[in-house]
Image 1 (cartoon, rainbow, N blue to C red):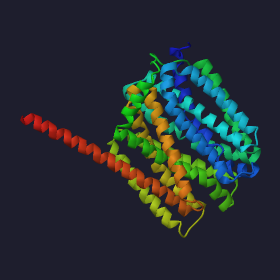
Image 2 (cartoon, rainbow, N blue to C red):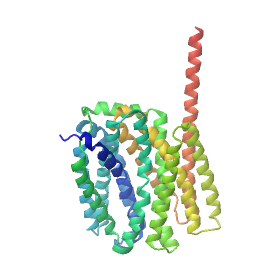
Image 3 (cartoon, rainbow, N blue to C red):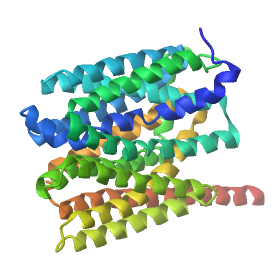
Image 4 (spheres, rainbow, N blue to C red):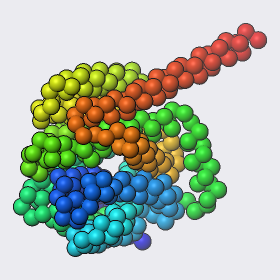
Length: 410
């Protein structure tokens, strides 16, 4: 077994951070190509959008399964295999005209992305602890938000000049380059491997999911990420079909979306020492007010500028919420290692897939007003979950204090 060298830990940490956004690249780079794929493959927009949902579902389920596997069999070798298979799947998509083959390959990409991301997040839990670990986990969503900035911008350019297949050639080469760098500079990081026992795994999952604040956190993450996914799935058709702009404009708008998300993440990290529930509650309330006001505005005004007003304001608040809640959930059960890591990532992605699928079925997002309505539904549920969690935490704290008073008087 090749363990990471002490001299390579700095480079290994950089590589880990650079690989965390691989899922975002796989999701966002071909967003500007959705209308072109629909036309070239002879598929409906909904059929092409399904490739996003399939990837997300596979990625989420994969994270649930691979966390305990990585605790038992290590991080390094599974990560290397996953990068190789991800690359092969990407090249296969680029060379097929079958939507069914794309579905299968996207599912494979989703599972392989899960292995890469969970192993790289586990890297930090293996090597760091305390305030340094908290600092790094708060950077996860900041790094993750780089993909929605870079990927659609690059994807719009690739689509305009080389066609939709070029996006997947890029993903294949991306994975190959990092596969080589990982082989040279990285290595195994887990000190003690845990036996692979289904009873231990199920008990750990049951323990985590039975804790309300953790489960509510996963749902909040899923809904917050769902805001971004609803935009990603609908924006190419709103911008390119309804407003008649080229794919490059879709990519530029998605880049602005990513910058807004990054701004929210950075603000959350800057306020990391502030009371947790107060700041996320404030962000959810502000997000709901903004979404409602913008929805009313678009009843009369429909253009690219009002759409981007949605994006900048609502997505900034979403980034703020996501950063704080992701760090909270990842460190809530850090003693469970890869299992907690996998359950956090898989749990919120599965909830995102479920929420997005149901909402797309219920609401036909064919203009900005319906996009605002979809946003508002998600944000209202987030607000309810946060208020419920805060109330429950206060009730538990009050109950504990009352018990301490009774014991003190006996």
